[in-house]
Amino acid sequence: MVKQVFKIRNSQGLFSSGGTYITFTKKGKTWTSSGALNNHLAQTRNDNLYIQEKCEVIAYELVETEVSVESVQSRLKLIQDRARLRNEEKRQLLRSILIEHDLIELDRLKKLYE
Image (cartoon, rainbow, N blue to C red):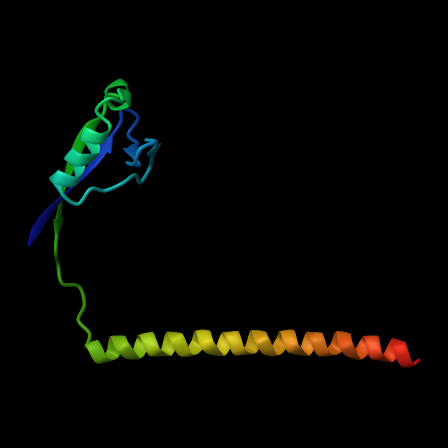
């Protein structure tokens, strides 16, 4: 399946960021339909920046190519493993914070009873 996407490029080869306050960057914004691009241009029609910058609309073709296949079960296991790892990292961080708190309290008590 072939799909077209669009970018707006200025004379320096930079791409529009889109939005209300237009800037130009190396990556820019990609509009996923000509309708979305037209809406953006309609919103900015009173702004001569695109004309001043001698901009042009670039259409790209995206071709869907199957590069890998995995089972949904495999992907769900990956999600669960990542969640488990994040939870373990949180537990370890909490453990280290509690130990640090205990050490500070121990030091305070030692000074108090010396």
